[in-house]
Length: 333
Ligand SMILES: [Mn+2]
Image (tube, rainbow, N blue to C red; front, top):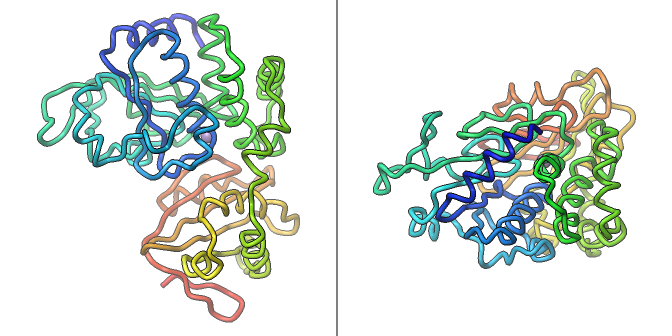
């Protein structure tokens, strides 16, 4: 990252009254880790800040220094939004993903607050690494070459010669670890590994991160994952392996939906299909996650055709509807 841009951002942050750090809906460790790392940076510079997420934040966020109960939600933010003159988003592809679409309208030069907040300007700084990012900010730091948004944050801190603490290193490494599928997927570049090495030299261990990020599944969730695996099928016409999970499954097994995060990456182990599609239904919507390990396959393009987005090797979309099992297949109804 160019030094002048990083300096310009810091100048903006220093002149801010209060900064809002926004995680995307259903935040993953990349979004949480980036927001938490920036929160720590602002803390060290004495810049007032708070967090926001449109959906609930997982309890793990506490390990990054974010108390989930203290994160603004859409209701509480409406009361407080006027306090914030700089808004930073992390790992969010567009304003909807950031949960801000009803709060902010994005004319490119000067986003304005809507409705009764009308007329008050706020400045958006958008940190992301998705190729499909809508560049909705006043500053758009979108680096598709970064394996994670936390890798981008590392570049930002590096450009500032800011000494990264062990706590910030934990946040950054967590995002990198999850977004590279533990340094296995094609996003795992040499520079991603160099960042990981730099973070580990600050005292973070992968074992420690692995324990709190991944090894928390209970027996009930593992049994449900077993059921999902047993449903795998491959329609020959598409050569994409499909598996699904419904809201009823989650209720029947009495598990936390959070416990089931990461199933799509797990299913990506499939070697005899071009790609993998994992469907999850609930609340009148179906969320599709696409993964591939094939060099020539671009699942991001497929997700875009279905109204979603993401990366070439990992992407997702949302459709209105529900799933109905039919024999060994599943139908969208
Ligand atoms: Mn990410």
